Image (cartoon, rainbow over all chains, first blue to last red; front, side, top):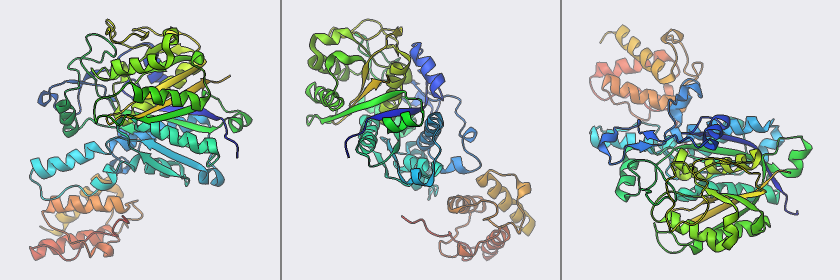
Length: 405
Length: 95
């Protein structure tokens, strides 16, 4: 079967910026930062105080009876965003479609809040036993499993875990399956819920978290801000989507991957550049067609100059013709969910002709020489856009989207 | 502890685990009718062990069908004054 074009026909999101796409995208396109004091744990015990949490979250608003107790927060987020994406796409599942739908999601750490609570019982409270649902709540595949159960999906379904690139790798796998005709629909994205003391302490020890806020690409940036949430999308063959009169947000046109093979935390320029080139080649996109890049843009000392140099290396002088923003400045770094949230943002940017800014922007680092869309959105209808995700360990994944015509 | 206190505590624990009202729970209510699945059962047994300070063995709870079965089982363990032999976990998870 010849490769098929792949359309995005539904989107869903829950993150610090909002609990659905209209709220989150509305906030992000206006440059509103959702970073604030961490409430999930006693932050006086950690060296940083701010995070991008989903605030005022009540799982019982989304899950009936004891069902919420069966899902860790990361899996709840996956189901919530998937529900929005499926409803948005107007999918009616028939028995045939259920057999031919895939669910592929990214996740970095599994049910860390659940795992943490077990360790607190065991090691801090000196209890002799732990809660019986720790295993099903903690397993990193739990989000995908609950999404399949939510809709009764029987097709290929699995979780991809490549740290902060998890979601982009997951979306890429789902894209490949739809493009090759292995499935006729995919629900894909990712989720993460890292606001557990053990996890926050681990990040504290890495010395990469900013004490104040997230200022990607700025000379006075002090590191990343952790975030949480989920992003989901529905992928289907473009022709089939058109035939059923579906709303088409964008075309997912290409996907590129690479490995740095260099260092477990330090990035290279060549690795990300290779993934960007591969994504563009896969999408058959010319450099002139790119009108926006949603950057990985973590605001760490290492990432931002390396990512900027990678973009410069691929595009040369053409890189001055488009905007590059890091929306992590607003929704934080959602780790294994980052790519999914940012992919939805990139899709909405193409759909609405609005480029979201890099918030909290002060002055560019001299080592970062691109146009970072500082603090205010731009009304630009880009033809195509990239969404970058790079990870500790040098596993790079780039998605290429084309605006729907 | 008299039966009525055990009964009351078992029902309150089940209501809390299942997030339903105690009024919905009768002694002859079957766990199936209350929508208590295997995960809820694991949690229920865990909570009962904490509340009554007892240890419920793994291999005998397949007999639990109703709320009354649980109350009787807990009562027997308490009366025995030692780790019990009448309640245990339900079907083990597949993997």
